[in-house]
Amino acid sequence: MSDDKRQAALDYHAKPIPGKLSVELTKPTETAKHLSLAYSPGVAEPCREIALDPENAYLYTGKGNLVAVVSDGSAILGLGNLGPLASKPVMEGKGVLFKRFAGINSVDIEVEADSAQAFIDTVANIANTWGGINLEDIKAPECFEIETALKQRCDIPVFHDDQHGTAIVTAAGLLNALDIAGKTLATARIVCLGAGSAAIACMKLLIECGARAENIFMLDRNGVIHSGRSDLNQYKAQFATETPLRTLDEAIEGADVFVGLSGPNLFKPEQLERMAANPIVFACSNPDPEIHPDVARATRSDVIIGTGRSDYPNQVNNVLGFPFIFRGALDVRATAINERMKIAAVHALKDLAREPVTKEVLDAYELDSLEFGRGYIIPTPVDSRLLERIPAAVAQAAVESGVAKKPYPAHYPLKSVKQIYGQ
Ligand SMILES: O=C([O-])CC(=O)C(=O)O
Ligand SMILES: [Mg+2]
Image (cartoon, rainbow, N blue to C red; front, side, top):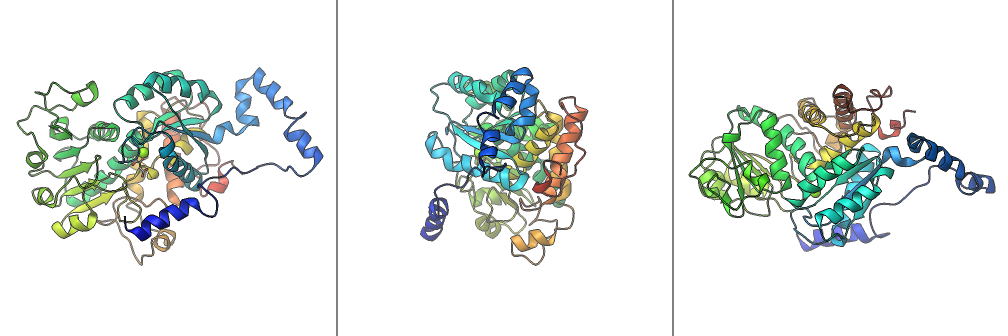
């Protein structure tokens, strides 16, 4: 990042008040009467009601629209393990996105835990007072154990955003990009650089959407994950292929798709040159992609490139997923975010990109036109139709798959975050 941009980012976080989030009041508090309702003695009444029936927490507290963003800071973006405190700007940032795009209140919780079990216990012990738990930036393989255990112990949605949010957005973008390139998921040869939480979840979801496991080549720091390796954990081992290929240089030859979920500048122009015609490159490491989009385009004019960043076209980033997916899940009081709900989100996202872009989006990106094609394979986060489409699709899937405790909301589809309480 240039010095100017770096300073601008630091100033944005520091001024005029430190941080990006605040808490707001939703009830009047001016008079003694108000205070006697908000606090002692009035507050005792909802306490008694909730003690009688936990469901009443949804009626008398903010639980139903409240998500905890929880991290241990062990895999912050593509920056690595910087610890819980250094993850706070990202976790506050997720809170900004929850609120801005889906009207969801969220609080970030950064956990200092010396084992996966300690982290699991900490979260499980507080989970019941939240509407949902969004796990963020927790390194593999611990993240898998953590998510599985918390799903078992909590009856609210627990969602590891880096796995499923990223996978949903990647699948939607890739289905569109393949269509534009005249290819299909079933026949595409896919190279995935990275074997962490996002990579593993993305490849799993792509297989559910029709990709063939034998066409997927996943690489970790030691090269291609193949069946001859003895150093693989159970999660990576699922992607071990019977192949003589060992390096990225070898695997990339003739590949249709490169998905980068690893680190900055790990994909070289010479490697892009060796991909098949109309190559699709999702360089999703944040903040610095595996290959810069300008470099990719200068290398090949036929490339379709997406990154995780807001400042380049085709932002393949979980921001297009988690706010809207939680909105739908919360509004039908889903007990989980299951595969049906994820796939519904993929299709809602994919289909929206094929509709004409609205003026709101053009204005936000200072563009005169934007059309479905190489430079626009996935909707932008500022598209207010995301709030209309994704929660509706997710809520419908939750109802149909039997995890919703409430019916499909009468006030759906949502046109604006102002409508989230149904008024
Ligand atoms: O925060 C982002 O931009 C996307 C994300 O979850 C990550 O990179 O870990
Ligand atoms: Mg993340």
